[in-house]
Image (cartoon, rainbow, N blue to C red; front, side, top):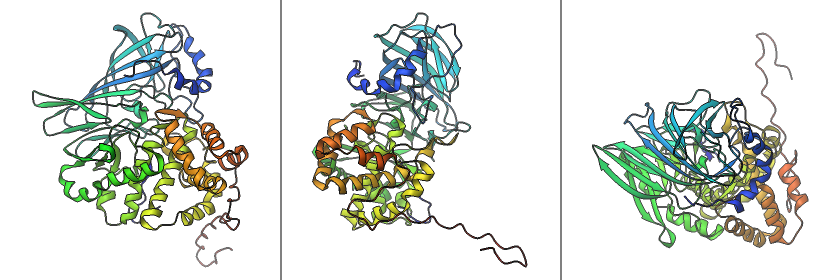
Amino acid sequence: MRLTPHRTRPRTRSCRPRSCRRRTSAALLASAVSVCLVAASAPAVPLGVGDRLFPYLGNPGYDVASYDLSFTYPGSNSEPLRAVTTIDAWTTADLARVNLDFAHGTVQSVEVDGETATFSTAGEDLVITPEDSVPDGKWMRITVWHTSDPEPAEGREGGWVRTADGLAMANQADAAHLVFPCNDHPSDKAMFTIRVTAPEGHTAVANGLPAGVDRAGGSTTWTYRTQHPMATELAQVSIGRSTVLHRTGPHGLPVRDVVPAKHRKALEPWLKKTPDQIAWMESKAGRYPFETYGLLMADVSTGFELETQTLSLFERELFTESVYPAWYVESVMVHELAHQWFGNSVGPRTWSDLWLNEGHATWYEALYAEEQAGKPMRDRMKAAYGASDRWRAAGGPPAAPKAPEPGRKTGIFRPNVYDGAALVLYALREEIGRPAFERLERAWAGRYRDDTVGTQDFVRLAAEISGRDLDGFFQRWLYGEKTPPMPGHPDWKPAAPAKPAAKPAAPGKAAAR
């Protein structure tokens, strides 16, 4: 995710249990799995996988292998879509009940392995009780017939985003379950098949590659499939009066962009930059990790851009409002592109590992601006150093962010995980040297491709690549309340907090000093 500044000024089914990957989530799930082993007669309760920032997000007892999502769009983005969600999962505990995250739609019926199951709700969980318990170590198929409501959920952010001519998705950080039932935590990646049926005149595009188009009775059904596992928060579906543009990226990579038909000509100069940007990122982080890429330019004001996997979401006005200089727009494009490596392919194990996503995306955004537009990285990092203590006080250290306020789940996207986390990477490059740092970046993106990782994985790999014990360095930079001295720059100092503006004096009196 890249927050958009104020408009007036720029600122900077893989059918197999993934036990080898899921071992990395064992500690997170250990305390939660036992909760799942309650009798079916006990009251339904919301569960979670123990995420420090989102304790009720995700569910224990199973590992999703694939989602099959079907949406039928009625032609209006204010009416609910009819939907069917099918989940294939491998059980990791005996399950008398199965909890899914789902909080914004009406459930009509549920089946588990082809048999009707009863269901209820608890918090933001859909709690399913199959006729017979599902044993540990078995495949399980859950099918839910439901609606998916594009009207904003009261007191919640994200899910469906209503555009000028249809819909798009913005599921970060915990809003995929406002769209479809799921295990809504980034530690449980899965394969996706997405089908969208819409009336004539509309076009639907989703993550992955096209897998069929069927026309019947005045409507069209588009099918897309991913070729790599994906976190629920990265799912994307675009429905609208759109044009899909095709071009070729490095190594024959299919690049497809989705734009409002009436803005096609104005947006093309920006879209044609993508293949060269992919090549630039490949020179830094290795080969592009997915089957396709492209930009979804939506007629909507969201306040952010979003790295949905293989199809990044952008506000159309970012490219058409003259307030933004070209170098800035291109660097934001690279920010979301960099996420395809850092945050999507190499995904966070917990939401406290968000700095690994946003810090790296901000790093390459700034590096691109330096190399392509002459905007020095050093200047940006020196400014970030000056503000870092304030960011840590307000949002927590980069790897231990403070919990968001109720109803403001996107509140974890603070400066401490953007430029504050990029500052950690800058300090690391100064500490271990540019050659070791560049080897580390490529090794990180390559070794953990399609995996989920945590902060300690990065710490260990940095030590391995550099041949140095970096525990103390990372402890100070990632978890310290104060920003450590910058290696190689003893003159860099934290900036003093800005003095609050004086209150206006009462009539006839001078303002106090």
